[in-house]
Structures are given as C-alpha cells and as structure tokens.
Image (tube, rainbow, N blue to C red; front, top):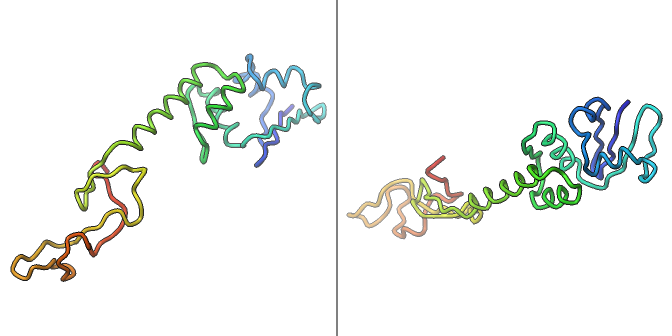
Amino acid sequence: MSIIFKCRDGEIKIEQDYYDRYLDFDWYISIMMRYPNNTDNKGTEEDKIFNIFESKNALLSILDSLKFKRFVAHNDISLDYLEALSDMWCVPEWLKKEISQRKNDLDIVKNKIYKCRNCSNGFKLSENKYNSCNTHSFCFNITHNTFQCCGKSDPNDGCIKGYHIPQEY
C-alpha cells in the first residue's frame, strides 16, 4: 500500500512501511493517517491519497529530516516558511530547534563583513551585487599618473567591475 501526498506543486508517494518506520508518531501527518474520514482522502484500498496545499520540497524536507533525525533542507525552501509549517504540524521539538538554528546561522553569515580579494574593500554577502567590486588589474604608474591596465587616473573608476570575492574563498 502507498501513501500519496498531492502538494500544490507536485506529488510525493511513499510506501506504507516507510511511513511505519520513520513517520508514525504523534504529529499532523499521523493524525491524518489515523482519521482519514476527516480529510479529503480519496484513496483506494491500495493507496491513500491526501491533498496538502503545501510546497512539495517543504514536505520532503520535513519527511527526510524525520527519517535521518537531522535537519535536511531541500532546494528553494524558505526557512521562515519551514519553521511556521513545522510549528503548525507539531513536528518534534528537536527539528524546530534545528530549523531555528539554521536560520540564525544564515543571518550571521549574511551580516558578516568580508574583505574582497580583488579590491580589499569590506562588504556583506547580502549586499554584494554584479558591480560592487570596482578595481584595476595593474598597479598605478606614478610617472604617468595613470593605471597601467587602462590608462585611467581615477582609482574609483576601475576597469574591472563585478562581484566582490571574499578572501576566505
């Protein structure tokens, strides 16, 4: 027998034994499974079908996290959305804490000031744009009062423009 979750952007099909091994404890999905008449379950004897108006990757993130007993984030998932969904679905506290910790870790990385490998200026990753780094490729020629790479004299008008590159990378 299979369990099918029809999400707003796709479908997830899992086997009953997978559910029994990893997901059968008190939380939203298990309550749906125990009381299918209270949902819009349209399954057959072989399959149980549940319509869940949530992102497929969010549901996969929660299911895989519960399976592996550590937070697993699938692509293109907002941690704020995942945190709210986890709270609404009564997932275990350890998973809620791990999602919250990941959010905090990302905030620290976003607000950390890095030094650019090319121009030596400080920048935040969250503010790094396609034209943030503005530098010259060769040194300044004092006798001609210009940069050797482009002939310009203004150090703020670099001939190389692009993203800042953190020295750590």
